[in-house]
Image (cartoon, rainbow, N blue to C red; front, side):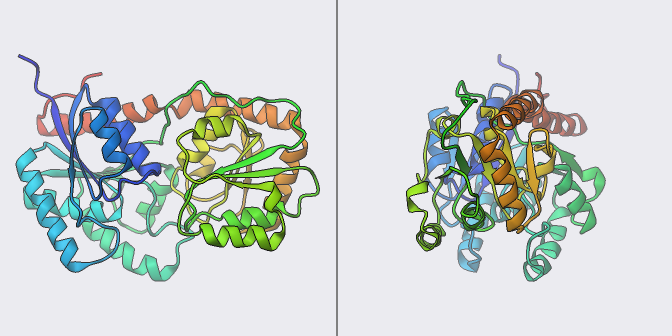
Length: 375
């Protein structure tokens, strides 16, 4: 008879392509030989398709939405509680704000242990205080229902402690990791270097700040945006206003991000707030130097002047200077890109993320007498 497996019910709000969804996919697919997973998601999109293709049971709860809607939220909570009762997991593992709240409430209603992965706190530095004033007390209350928090950076661990939403003994840091691919950036001379930003066109990403900064760089360049979202029209308006339409490619959502990065010379992520963004790890995986806003846990991935250049939040002049350096200096790009690839191999592979998460599961399994999570 096959040995019993740890049963984990994962809950996430949306299934659209994004960093948290890719993280959940890689986590579930990477550990499914050691853990029995089932997944709850609020829509039938990218994530559910990927998981079903891997043979994972997916429960779609349409009332599980980002927006605050009391009737839908109540129905979603009831549905989640019913699923917890049916699946009878040892552990509920939540991701994203709404699924994190309702999923932990549903687990508590059934007496099931819950953990939560915070991909980026809604009260991080860079978030308006009006929003923080609502988010901090809510997350502090949810912390009483949470056995462990997995945070994706040391910066997020410090924020959780600073605002008293979790006790130090509840927190475990597991850096994000991404799957490797064979695609690599082609270093050397580039007549027109391509600067690529892979990100959803929505707050807190700052596509327009990148455009206004690079428009002032007096050298050949081209900008490639991979991703779509509600701010696309505003980005298009800024391109037209700056008169740089012939130097900007808006590629929308793509399934070949690794190839797009390999065909670029610089990876960029300009943002007001981050947790530990996968887009930066994908650029490092490709062997690209990275220019990024120095927010959240970004500096735990990008080593300034070694694997890339960090710039202060909202600092257009510093961003322009960093872009100017890497656009014109091919040897510097090559050196930083190689250092970034080495850092990715050492610390930010998907296997490193899987083992870090498995260690949290195993810790709880020992405490509770659950089936082990063997390597």
